[in-house]
Amino acid sequence: MHLLYRSCLMLIASFLLFVPSYMANAFQSAPAQSAKVGSLYAIGFLISVSIGSKPFAKLSQVKYKVLSTLLLLGLVSCISICQMLHVSGVLTLSTFGGSFSMFLWGAGFAIPFYIPPSLYVLHQGGKESSATIADAFDFVGFLLLAWFNGFVARRQKDILLSWYMPFTILTGCS
Image (cartoon, rainbow, N blue to C red; front, side, top):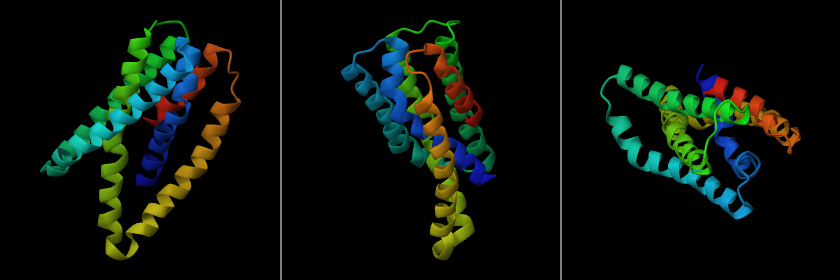
């Protein structure tokens, strides 16, 4: 279960690679502006881990950790669905809305991506085997990434609706 969880979240993390091309295609952003949005995604990630990891670790009951994780992943799902609706023409997001949603996306998945899997690995593997378990997580995740990144890279770049399926996959992973 943890292996599948972490591997799916690796796809969401890898979307950072495609943020500039997505912003250029979906919002007609200039290349420099599109790259800045990629930075917003990473800044959301950094802020979330920097500020939120300590309070998350201090949650006393497992049910609160699970609830917090589900709420953060729910945010990621909502953002992904909004992007799906945008590329399908059902919802129109402004460039600011698209940029802000990428910041929230980075902020929303950072803690679920790092903290629960790391705690699981440390609990199950201890000092002796935690690196081996983490490597197994990464191996499976990178296999999934190889497929997903190739899938996104092969889509028709000039057709906005070609982003629909990648967001469908990302929504399923969140």
